Amino acid sequence: MKRIVGAILAGGQSRRFGSPKAFAKQNGVYFFQRAVEALRPFVQELYIVSHPALVSRFQQETSEKVIVDEQVYRGQGPLAGIYTVMKQTEAEWIFVLPCDMPYMRASTIGNMVSYIDASFDIVVSAHFGRVQPLVGAYHHRVIGDIERLLKAGNNRMFWLLEKSRVRYVKEEDFFEDERVFRNINRAAEYDDIVTEDML
Ligand SMILES: Nc1nc2c(ncn2[C@@H]2O[C@H](COP(=O)(O)OP(=O)(O)OP(=O)(O)O)[C@@H](O)[C@H]2O)c(=O)[nH]1
Ligand SMILES: [Mg+2]
Image (cartoon, rainbow, N blue to C red; front, side, top):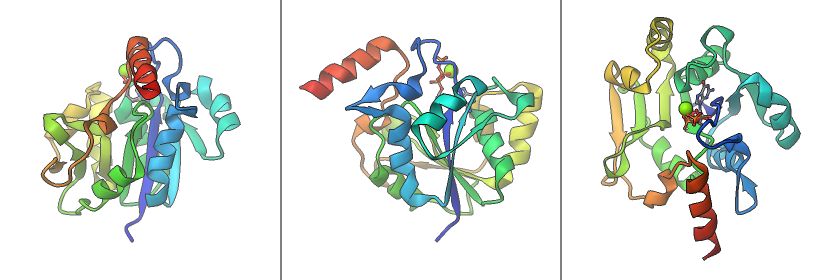
């Protein structure tokens, strides 16, 4: 079995949402816990990467490891979170998930894992024409590229994808319910899913 380490990104400020998204609930379960459930079967180790203000809250709610972004790159977004986990481990692959996709599930991750291939640097979902840079596996070898981007303040995931060999996994590779990739950014989007789940 490939050695894969999980990284759940939970270091954002949830500005649009208004309160920490990781602790919003879907059917009674915290959003971040959905990511844990989806990733857990496929990883030897798992890190929740957040920021200092949320660490104690996470520690109350989970026994998973909680770490904070490396101080120099704190606040620089998801790339900083991935970099931080890469610094913690020598595992070849880091499987990343955000904390705001409450419908993500283990079967999706299992399918994604089956497309991991060392001839690529990055294997991400691009189902239904939408690249999901935060749903996929990153080879440890991109750590140098990430560091250069962060140093230059080029924080967008897009810049890393552009310079890497990327396997975009699509609906013709494995079909998936579009809802699995739904991510929640605003309170109004949250209200929508709460209503839908009641129907
Ligand atoms: N570790 C880490 N994770 C981050 C950082 N910025 C965003 N994330 C996570 O990346 C995912 C996608 O980010 P966004 O949807 O922009 O979430 P956000 O930044 O909390 O929300 P906004 O403040 O509204 O942009 C979420 O799971 C965030 O928690 C960061 O600087 N470090
Ligand atoms: Mg953000």
